Image 1 (cartoon, rainbow, N blue to C red):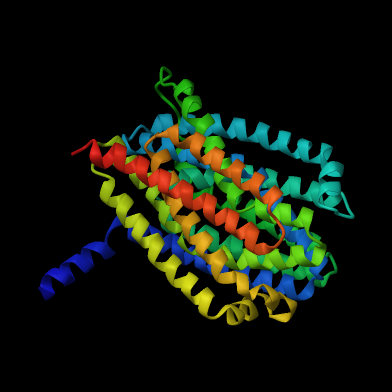
Image 2 (image 1 turned 90 degrees about the horizontal axis):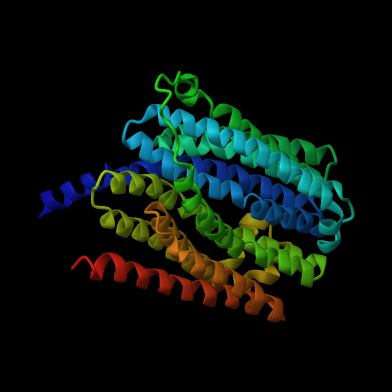
Length: 427
């Protein structure tokens, strides 16, 4: 019995999902620790109003960068298939095709931010349009960075991704602290994100150099763009809607509440998202592994189950801690002060992020297999969350309750869809 348990433990430790997630976890935790230090520094050295400006613009950046996150999903999907089948020349052509597309798209996004800088500033009650312009520059950098990051992920270079994450996180901290000390206020936080992203893009070239410099000898090789488009459009709207789940609440609170209360909610959201950031390496590593198994005809259900368990257990543990010791957590992350007024909401918010993290695993599972029929359910849920918050925002309990209810309903639907299509039909 003891030998069986030991053998099972060793097998689990060596599992590609666990080893890959471990590398990503180390890099992300180090980067998150550095981000935590920077956020503590910002929360303590910026006024409540300035911190609300930074947080609301960070949410705008996240939403505007969703096409980049969607591109990551699309690139990883097809690049992993080419890599699994050892089609290196197609891999090179795919890189060049997406590089041209991303360069054009990033420039367009920047121009869009510049044109809309005044309306966005008015909606968020900002006193300087250059906040929005700088946010546009940062988003453009995100688009550039996603290309190299996606190819590293598709090639299963998880240890190098961990290194890149750590180094760029250190750059973000150093730049942010230096600029705040120099008096740049919320601008300092925004510039730190830009330099982190651009540094990550440059470092990512190193392990891809042989593939990028490869000369394509077979001139008849081509990429099926129709296949890419048929997956890209529903994948894009799905990732956009999924990201909106954890961003629109912050933006709507900034719109409906006074600056101080908006700052309190931004701090609450920051702590709550620790659950998501703590577990996100699991679906990130799971995605290319599932694509590889599916494209080579191997079983993938056990990988999905393992991913759900690896996300659920730590998420519940953190949530319980949030319920029991909210003041300790808020003192640790935000330095206490008036932020302690949101302590009563922390466990509830953690419960919402636990459910959302499981939704994220399910969505990544279906997209890795090319099952884009889930798009209407995810899009509809995101719209429903926004509409309900728009009408029910008397207090933070209502806002969090709406997010929890909608994400729970979506999770139930996704799990039902999985069992109907991958369990019941296979029996």
